[in-house]
Image 1 (cartoon, rainbow, N blue to C red):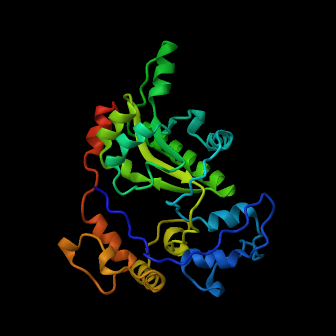
Image 2: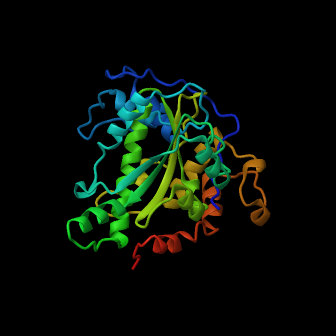
Length: 308
C-alpha cells in the first residue's frame, strides 16, 4: 500500500488567479517564488536573453497549480466534459498511435465498488468527475489483427509508450480543466489493489490503469506545494548531482518553515518513530524504504505484457 506524502493540516489558501484566455497581468516572480518556497528576490524569471518573461494566462495557471480534493456539489455539464476530453486528446502521442484509453466512472454503483480499494480517496464516491487513465495496447492489437497483421509490441518499451501517452493526456485534461476554474487530483491509489480495480473495470489484456483523476468545482482554494529547486531537477548538458545533499537540506528547511509536519502526520512511525524536525527528505526516504505495489509486474504479465 502506498504512503501518500503528508499535506499540511492548516495550509494557507491563496486566491486563485482570474481565469481568462487573455494575458495575465500578475508578475510571474511571486508565483515562481511560491512554487519553490523562496523569496521573490531569489526566484528565476528571466528568459535566456536576460529579458523578463512575458506574462501569459497558461504560465500563470501552471505556476498556480495545486491539487484539489474537495469539490462543491455543482455538476460539470456534459458539454464541458466533452470539450475537456477533446483537449485531452490534443496531447502529444508517440507516432500518433494513441495508446491510451480513459474510463469515465459516473455510475454510483460502480463508484461504490471502487471505493473500498481506494480508502485514502474519500472524494471518489461523490466527486463530479472521476476518470481512470489507462495505457491501452489492446485497441491497436485488435486493429492490427483485423487487418491481418501480428502485434509484436506488447513489450516493455511498448508499455512505456502507452504509459507516457496516457500521462500526457491526463496532464492536458488537468491544464484544460484548471483553465476554466475546475480543480483536479491525480490518484495513484488505484494501483494499490490493481487486480480488484481491473476486475471492476473489466480491463482486457493489454490495458494497464496508470492513475485515476477526480475533478470538480473547488470547495476551497487549496495550497501551493513547494517543489525541489530547479538546479536539482534540471541538469545542463549532462547529469550532475553536485552538492545534492546541501541543496536538498536547504529545500528541506524552506519547506519545513512553511509546512512543518507534526508527529500525527508522519508516516511509518511504528518502524522509525517520530521526529521534531521531519522534512521532505525524511518523509521521502521513509516512503522509499518500503516496497510498494510489488504485484504490478505480475499483473502486467497477466495482462499480456512482456517485461523482458
